[in-house]
Image 1 (cartoon, chains in turn green, red):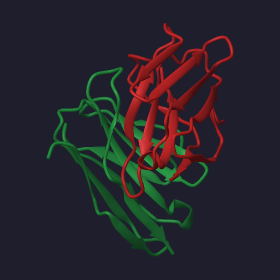
Image 2 (cartoon, one colour):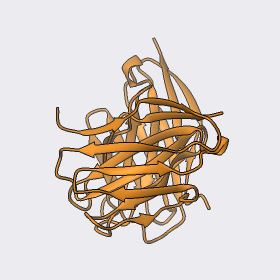
Image 3 (cartoon, each protein chain N blue to C red):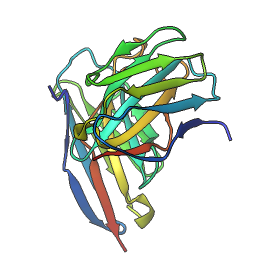
Image 4 (cartoon, rainbow over the protein chains, first blue to last red):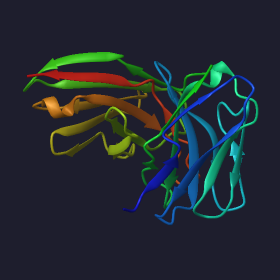
Length: 112
Length: 113
């Protein structure tokens, strides 16, 4: 099925460990986004990529890095995980400007 | 800085009633206002959106009302059903500017049978 696929769905990390959250879309979206969702905070933009080869910081980029590997894939890396990064992470894609986002089903990350 | 403020945080409505969720924004450059619906364990999905050239947009039981002078917009769900129970997010963006949607805090809606 066409859409945005995130892996893994669940992950538990120890403080200081690193990991990469994967996102792939098959909707030919130009723009891709990483958000984190925390209770009472809504969704906050971490990084985004307006097109292949470009990335920009969002509202809460500290502690994260991203790679737009190609048009389909946009990964989020935590170099040294901290408990404050415990959250649900969503990847999203957007085709044409002004159209809605298509979100993946999320990655629930716990850092202990 | 919270650019989009959403209320209430939670809402309980009886089946058949009207659910109303409100949002206020600060940045007058925003000109695209979508609402997203999220079911547990799923990602948000676009429900309905409005641009400020109209004051109201209706799609089925869902209506957005927009007040540009007050910098407020709201979602009305008519004849609310238990299947509408979900978390709703308002958002704002600058249309055609390589979107960086700013989301409200979310409203958890529960429709009781």
